[in-house]
Length: 355
Image 1 (cartoon, rainbow, N blue to C red):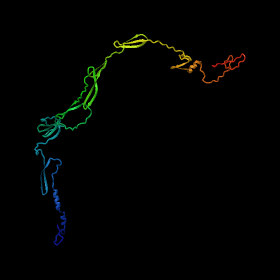
Image 2 (cartoon, rainbow, N blue to C red):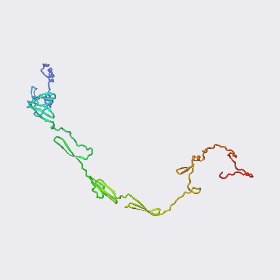
Image 3 (tube, helix red, strand yellow):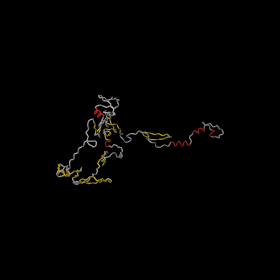
Image 4 (cartoon, helix red, strand yellow):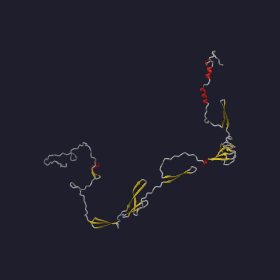
């Protein structure tokens, strides 16, 4: 209910109780335009899976109504969809009518569209028999790409060809590298050749040759693997000696290779000379004979303490023992004094220069 507070009939919005608030609650043109724009919709992206679909959409008084229906094999023109059951423990071949079969340990009655595995093959039940779908043995397993490998090690063989059959089996053939044979040529009958130098230019190798030539009394035979060098002089020396001529001295000699005889010729005579060694004296050099109590070592004559003791018969003292000697008498050895003055027929005793 709207109450008018002004009786002057000068009606304005403010004179009508609640009109301004009612108008404020109403949508503005901008609000209406925005709301209409929000009703726009684009084709949405598919989300999830379902076996149903929208069959129709209608709108009345702004209310949208949609109807749905289920997707059936009949609707798609299919009598039935295929369903994988698993691996069959029962033997199955193309065209077989075996039904039921055992899946794992469970006996299963199959229906049209059921798919099973047996061995390396896949079979589908058509409703009356089994039909082979595929044989995994007829498909090549995808392989990883292989790039060119790096060289490794050394060899004198190489890959000659590579081929691959329809099953993807790769076959490679190898051959050995053939190296050229270096030859120095053939040797002559009585000589042989040796390497005289090797020259390398790129892949070309040139081998020079030199020939061994036999001298006197020598033979050289060149073979395929070796060179034989032999001497023809087999003289190993004289087998007999003959002395001719007169005298006692050899003045000439000769050798006969044919008879291998050595001939010595005497042609001079020399007198025999005998040397007699004189005895040594105080004035003449000569030979001496070593007596007893003398030591000779490596040609050196020496007198040792042992020689002196053996000659004296006793060991002489090495220090003064202060021996006192008494005056000599007619019966006792002792000391005497010289220098008596001659008196009458009494004569002194004299000592010569040797005491």
